[in-house]
Length: 118
Image 1 (cartoon, rainbow, N blue to C red):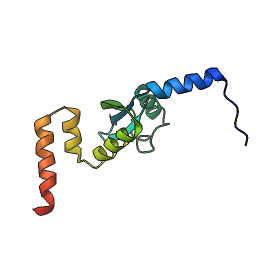
Image 2 (image 1 turned 135 degrees about the vertical axis):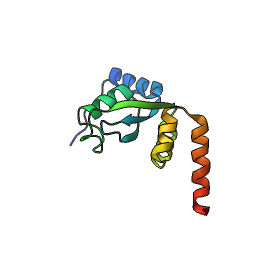
Image 3 (image 1 turned 45 degrees about the horizontal axis):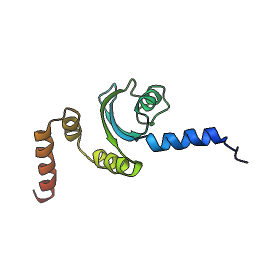
Image 4 (image 1 turned 60 degrees about the vertical axis):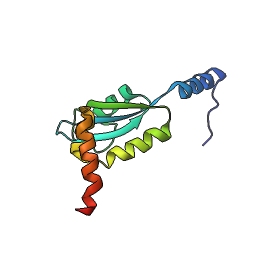
């Protein structure tokens, strides 16, 4: 299958989009209460995709979804590292992040660090 050549204007537009797009980690709250974490360069488009059943398979049967949290990053690598970190968290810790409860986040981080030794 041959690739179609892009015009110079299309290449410029694509390059500008890559230069200006900040990455964003987001948490969606599904209709059944599930918290879904992902990353994207266009948060509005991505939420619409989830609600049109074009997002992650996990959210398809849990519509509608609503944006609960977002956090910007300068590049994909940092966003994906943060996404992986948040995906490893407990529901309680994610809820503390969403509500920006720093003391609860700190408490949950300490209890998780100690849990292997209890």
